[in-house]
Image (cartoon, rainbow, N blue to C red):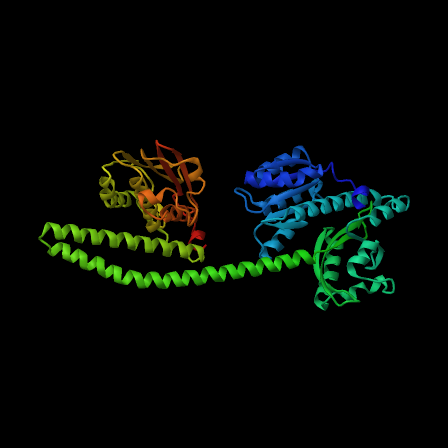
Length: 512
C-alpha cells in the first residue's frame, strides 16, 4: 500500500562501480522498478555526473581506483546541495571499522557483496521512499500548522518510523510505524521508550549525540539494541536524526526516521563467522602444505646435491645422460613444491615483500642465462631488448626475478622453432615495463578468461606444468602495485606485459 502513496518509480539512481559487469547486474535488478538509471566507473566521473544531473540515490562501490567510495562520498557531502542524497555502499568489506568509516563518510546504508536481488530492490526502494519523505518534511517544516494533515498521512504510510523531538528532548510526534518497530503497546507511554534500550551506555551515548546534533546542526546516524517489552526479544535499530532549524537559525528540536535492521545485523554476523571459518581452513591448509613441502624439499635437495656430485665424477656418457635426467626431474619437482608453498602463503595472507634497491641489468643477465637451456630445448631463439638508462628499482628482487623466469619459461613451453623476445624499458618515468613475446601456439579468448585462476590449467597438459607460474606472477605483480596484461591470438603467439612501479610502496611489505 505504501508504494501507491509514495511513488518512487521515476527516481534517478546513479550506480558507481569500476567493474562494468557489476553495473550491468545492478541495472538488470533495478530496471523492472522503472527508475531512471545512470552509471559511472570511477569516483571522479560520478562527481562530474552529479554536477550535471542530481540523482535521488547513489549506489556506490567502496573499492575503486583513484578516489575510493569513502572519499567520493565525503566530497559529495561537502556540498550542501548534495548532503541529503542517500548513499548506499556496495562492498565486500564487512569489518566494523569499514562500516563505521562508511557511515562517517555520509552513507545511509550498505549492501554486502555478493548481494541478493530482492535485498537490493527493497533497500533502494526504502531509502528512496525515505528520501522523498525527508524532502517533503523539509518543505513542510516552514508551514507545519497549515500542512499538519498532509504530514500525518505521509507518516501513516511511511515504510519507516518517523518521529519529532522537541527542544526539551521529548518526543512531540511519532507515527504508528515508530511504535510498531519498537514494540510499544498502547499502555506504554512514549516518554518511556528509552527504557527499552538494552544498555545504559547506549542510552547515554544516544542522548549525547542528540545534543551534538543540535549544537553542530549536523545529521547523525545511530545504531543501538532494544529489548521488546512484551517478548524480551533483542532487536537492532537504526535511527537517522536531523535538526529542525527555524528561519532565524534557531533549533526547534530534531526529526528523524527509525527502522529495524536486525536481519541485516544477523546477516553481518553470519558473514563474519563464514569469513573466520574460511580463514581458519586456509590457515590450516597453509600450515599443512608448509610442513609437507619442508619434508619433501629436504630429500629432494639431497638428491639434487648427490646427482650433481655424480655428474662431476662420472666419465661414462650414458651415465651422464641418466644422471642429468635425475637432476632435471628433481629440480623441476622442487620448483613445483616451491610454487605450491608460495601459493599457500598467498592464500593464508602470509606472503610479504622484502624491498631493496637494485639495478635491473644484472638481474636480467642472470635470468636470461638461467633460461637459455629451456630456450634451446625447443630450438627457439631468444632476443633481449633492454634500455640502458633504466633507473634503479626498489622492489622485491626475488619476486621480480621469479616473474621474469615464469614468463620466459611459459613462452619456452608453448613455442617450438620460433622466437622469444624479452623487452625491458622504463615507462612514464615511474614504472618498469617487462614484456615477453613469443611466436608460439597462442591462447584462445576462452582460455584467456581462466588463465590466471588458481587451480585452473590452461593448455598446460600438452606442454607440461601446473599453471601455477602465471598465477603467482599475477599475485606477485599485484602485491608490488603493478599489473599484468596479455595480448594473444591463437596460432600466432602471445605477449605478456608486466608493469611494475620503480619504487614499490613500503605498505606493500605488510602481508596481504
